[in-house]
Length: 618
Image (cartoon, rainbow, N blue to C red):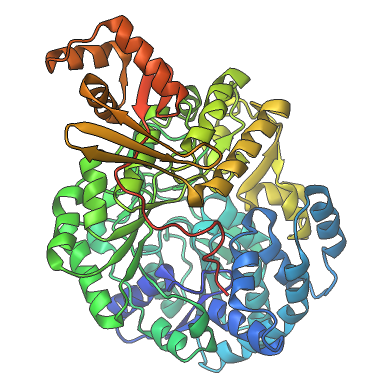
């Protein structure tokens, strides 16, 4: 059997497809007689645009439409005309949508005329390998481009078997995708390691796949959806990805000069925090929340093999959350290896100073710690399990250990109020030396999140997000099963407080590149050099118990706890005197206050910074 694995736009062009890499290895291991090939449609699309536009539409434009516009559906819309055989399909609705939200759509409009020709070229290239089965992986905005190509493949070769899988096919989404697109023969819902080999056996034998858990298939003209399984794939059964075809395609591509390629690895699946406390807004891990992780030794061997084979040092992990055991059995191995790796990791924001230091020492340069808010009550509404003070400590320690920290400031939670935000907004100017969020964003209702599954949490009314109206030509009741994002009534803050929050975050982002608040030891004294944006430059000298107090507050403490510690350390200071000093330091912006807890803000290091947006691809 010839199996062609396909990843279509808008997969990031600087990364191999982990899904394709895993499935390639899986099929070769399970069915060694099969011939497996790959089609990297995302890379092909970037090449196609570059060539057909005579260099006007470049890989940076690909990123702007495919990644930066994900919550407006621009990437899917680019291919909707090809799917529905109408170059103008959805254009009027998109223009109305963009005008109402001040969304820039010119680049997407420029790309749309190339989509149909690209799909036709893809079909010719895929069919040239004479596949028996074409398997598409679809996540985020890969649905419409994949559907458009699948439709064209079946038009040209009706006997071809088309299979879809990936995150966009989880749960009811997979069945809706199947029943609304007759040219899709099968949809694998959930993890594919067990399901795909079972399906291929049925195709070989010509039997009905009634026993493949979660699979959608056609029984005549009726779309069947087998019951999904609760069984998850064991780490031992997750193969190591094969990226040889991807690297060959990239190295032969004119796009190579525009990107900085990275490797992708997977250490764990699921979320150990979500198993106990599912964050209320999070829809990740829809049908597979159960946390599983490869042993640290195996993960290191996998990374070592991939780095040696592909000669790439940037490694992106796709784990939703780091396995805490990796601080014992994986990261120390990375440190000991001597490899000059640059790791990217998602972590929880309550890591200790020592754990963040180990991340830095291991070569981790970029983390996503899921900070989400700096107010403890809002974090409680999210069920995040951390405090605002702890999140500030994480931001500060990222500076100390040269960790780039990506995070969003979210709002719009049922039950939040102005009183939860005003104290935080008032303190944002003092935080300008710490890494800012990407922006302040109102949460959107995500399928599989507690907000979605339990209307009692505050979002009783919901409908498919409006952006899907310019993406799919389907009735709303089918969209309700197909899509991931939903619109609902706004909750939480609005008006004055919402405007204040957005303005404060914008000023934080603007002032951060040239702001510093640095500790320096001068004998027994402690100096704090204040070089923050929009403040007079000054240096504070702290002596005796005041210097000790500011150091003690690096861990975050209440006044009473701080007084006990200073007294135990032999410092003679009254509670009243200490309280006056704390309030003075707070007014100077040297402390962050979260309820009764204070956290010191100066850092011991200040990494090199780039102006906001300076690192965008060309």
